Length: 122
Image 1 (cartoon, rainbow, N blue to C red):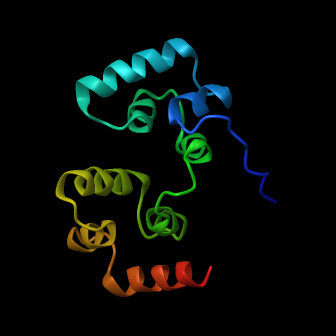
Image 2 (cartoon, rainbow, N blue to C red; image 1 turned 60 degrees about the horizontal axis):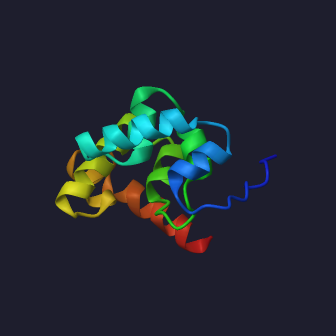
């Protein structure tokens, strides 16, 4: 049984991570500095530094994000590493996440269509 979604007072991911008890103010300041230096997203910085895990980040992300990557990951079609590589590529190229995963050979078109069709029914 899944736990109820936490209610956050902030829409900012850094503040949400602090509210959830996953980061300290000092960690957030370090992460923001690294974000400026690297151009990575704040969540990516925190993941790469090992301060949080993917489930903690997902819990704190606003629910407006695309779910195709999460569904492919949960279905076992891709790994977390493949998802992050594809998301980074998407940010730089502007291509759709599914297109990137298919082009890299990590997901075949039929599997992508199947996962996307399930998402439309929900």
